[in-house]
Amino acid sequence: MRLNYFDYFRAIAIVFIVAGHSFTPWAIDSFPEMVIANLITGGTALFVFISGFFFHHVFYSNFHYKKFIIKKSKKIFLPYVVLTIIGFFLIVVYLKKPHPMLTNDLNSSYDICILFFQYLLTGRTLTAYWYIPFIMVIFIISPVFIKYISLSIQKQIYIFIFMLCISMLVHRPVSGLSPLHSVIYFSPIYLLGIIFSLKQAEVLKYIKNKSLLLAILVLVTSLAQVIIYDSYSNFHKADIFSYNGIDIIIIQKIFMIFFFLSVLIKIDHKEIPFLKYIASISFAIYFLHPYILFFLSYSTVIKYINFLPGLAIFFIKTFFTIIISIVAAILLKKVLHKKSAYIIGW
Image (cartoon, rainbow, N blue to C red; front, side, top):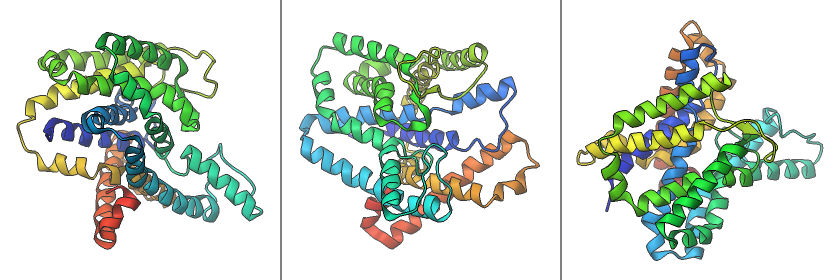
């Protein structure tokens, strides 16, 4: 059965992801700006929650490991490989705009191949692409999550809390360069998606009239991060075993997930075609928006609106990145037809 409210949630998630990558050149330095930016950033958690939800809701009842991996490889990993190849040779080799943490002298074909595989394994060819190596590892270890689903709800919750505590200590990897580090950090959010699917009716009933409370918790945790650390955005560190404070944003995003669900369940009975369309094309937006953002930056077109306040530039940049990504996806689908699913995931 199609869940309208979850389609709407997917649409919101992709908007948050694009927005979280569109800050530049907004100079975020005042307290209110830091709080706002902190609310916007970290949208990946919403995507991971969705993935965990669908793992149980769609795949669990008839789970077949080989078929599952093949399907995910075709719909997610293959577009990633194709777009990474294009991005690598265009951005890194031709335009000579490598990621600052992944550079090398390209004196031979061997050097190019070695560097390309570094980009492929880390996803750092373009903004946001680190997510694919990470989520593919999650899919590969799916039998672990199948076992998790078979546990009692009490054990599931204990494991979730334990993993969440670990996440708050290990933080996200710097620049998303370590897929395994990302797996450790985001696993509790994936588990939370599974738990929500298992106990969907009970959870929705519990949060249905708690939107205001959840909104306050989202705001309080965002404020707490800015007050305690005088910073915004995600917590990152290179050394997984070092201590660098307690990650607060992951808690904020959990509150945010349930805030959106508590609001969206109230309009589940309504058909909102625009949000449904955004949800259906979300993977195409995900795959294409890093290219749009790169060329907006490379062309310096943003300089023509630099006279506007930073927050206004941010909203304009986010809006046009989404619109251009949708238009590009539609054009590619018209040209490639069904093959577009293997290029842009749609």
